[in-house]
Amino acid sequence: MGDRWHVEVDRSVCIGSGMCVNHAPAGFELDAARQSHPRTPDTDASEQILAAAEGCPVEAILITLHDSRETVFPPEE
Image (tube, rainbow, N blue to C red):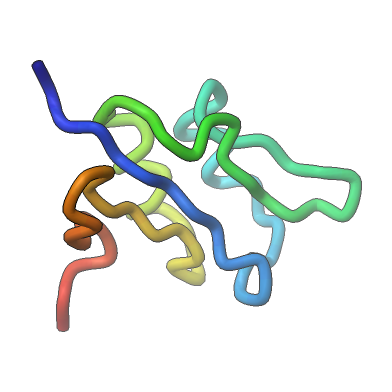
């Protein structure tokens, strides 16, 4: 069985570029204020979700392992 992730969007950082929706339309959506949020905060690990986080121009997407809350993205500096 693969990893489970918890996905969050820091709405105070999100600029509504929509890049996350372009990379992972099943994973993210923009609300009426053009703020991103995950469609399912607890989800299976996915290359598309990771690509969305990596492609976010302001790194507003945080991915952690569901059970341990260990950070998957962004990487530690």
